[in-house]
Image 1 (cartoon, rainbow, N blue to C red):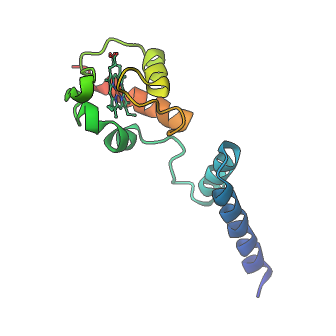
Image 2: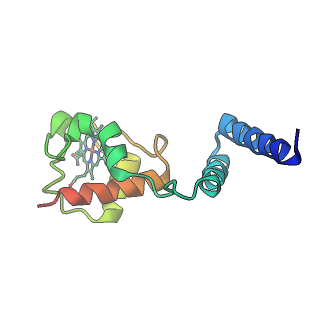
Length: 118
Ligand code: HEC
């Protein structure tokens, strides 16, 4: 086995270890390693993808569904910081996403909610 193959195995070993432990710092290290491996991979999370996964159940794909007392996001006048705060901490029936999403994902999805405004 060549030196190159051994260092490659070492790299994946570390990656596996980091993924298995999954703390925020290790997650960041894993992402950085993945980005270094693949320069095309996006470091900035996709706000639309997060929204489709976590938010459409109450807010709908266009932000206006309003289930469970959800606010119509196309009418929202909140600033980015206020949105990040509500998404992180929740409000009334809205789930707090602070432990479910990374701060980068929360910011990305908060920015995405601003695109509903007509
Ligand atoms: C379980 C239902 C539910 C889910 C899932 C949900 N929300 Fe909400 N959301 C609500 C409710 C209810 C409110 C209104 C809270 C209030 O009365 O101020 C709200 C309010 C908001 C507001 C504030 C709007 C305003 O103008 O006051 C934002 C921004 C928001 N949600 C974004 C999101 C995002 C982003 C996600 C996904 C990460 C999400 N929500 C997932 C129920 C939900």
